[in-house]
Image (cartoon, rainbow, N blue to C red; front, side, top):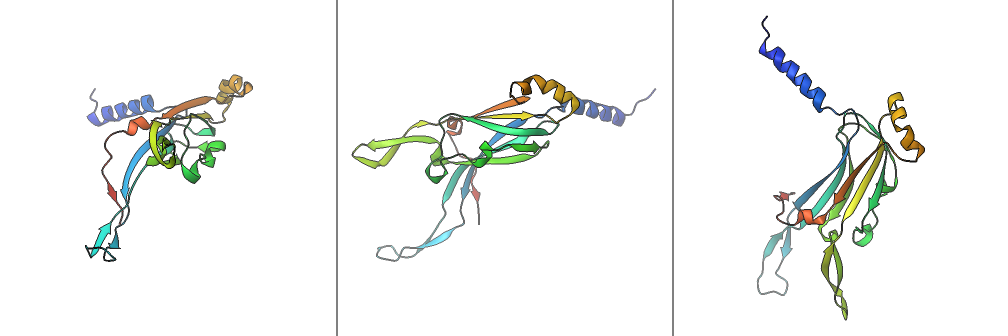
Length: 196
């Protein structure tokens, strides 16, 4: 009996898909470092300076994106977040986004949700360099952030039976933990992206 190579390849491909596919939701938080430059603009240096003329300038913007992705094979339901750690963003954005105190009703496989943006100046803990002049500050440490994602699988009969004991104790069916550590970003920046 002869078996064609394409039939064997197809069978192996199906076998790999069965092994790899997850029959439960798996939520992961991905982090990405950005190094972007704004469109150029011209500065006029002719006012009261010995060197006259115009020069072009771009501002650099370095930041980190956090994105929640369902990498599992089925839908995640009732996703809620728990935040631990001493991390706070600077300025008016000190509080974390409202998504962290709400519940995401469903997250299908492969879908992503943008969680938050962290600027480079949000990574350090600052204190006054000179007590007499509190305006000048220096970095004295790093702030960590731990995000716990609590979620359930689809609302099927089998899943209801599996999560009955956890629901009775007020818990969700699954939990994923992600720890953001600024020390991971010490080093070189990624290649620059020029806008405009």
